[in-house]
Image 1: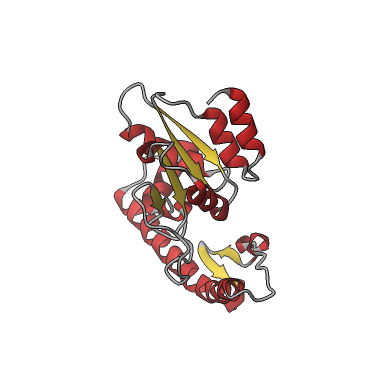
Image 2: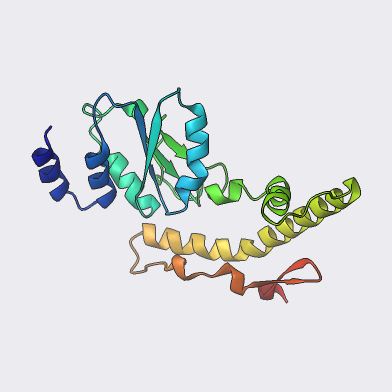
Length: 209
């Protein structure tokens, strides 16, 4: 397929991510391609992907904008034309376990273990690395590290418990959308930081106080 044919096909698709893929893709290139949801996702996935690739192979991650658009590309992909092993799709689990038929099951579709890929890195280990490498807070005593880890786990537990009622409301909205109700859930407008504050090193939710 020459460039004019590629541009002609791209002009017929409304999915910008797929158009970008057509421009980058070349048969025989030592490259794997991945579609991700948001602008920050490549920074989470690239390290894992490159570590698994053979030497001199590269990866091109294309931001689709959201899960719906990632899955639109997957549904419309011509697998007789593109190798399934070289084109992957990365989406967040979100509430898919409670919403039927949201994510296809395929070897080249990766679903995050937790609610989102960002949740997978929210650990005490990551906190200690950030404090050490970014904030230069090193040389802690063993007892101090243990206290820090315990405080982190306690606060994370408080956060999850506080968010349960919010997530229940979101699930209700998503199910209403799926049924075709005249409703659009504007979840991008939800600002979790407005509901929480740190008081004496304890994560406090304003919804419960």
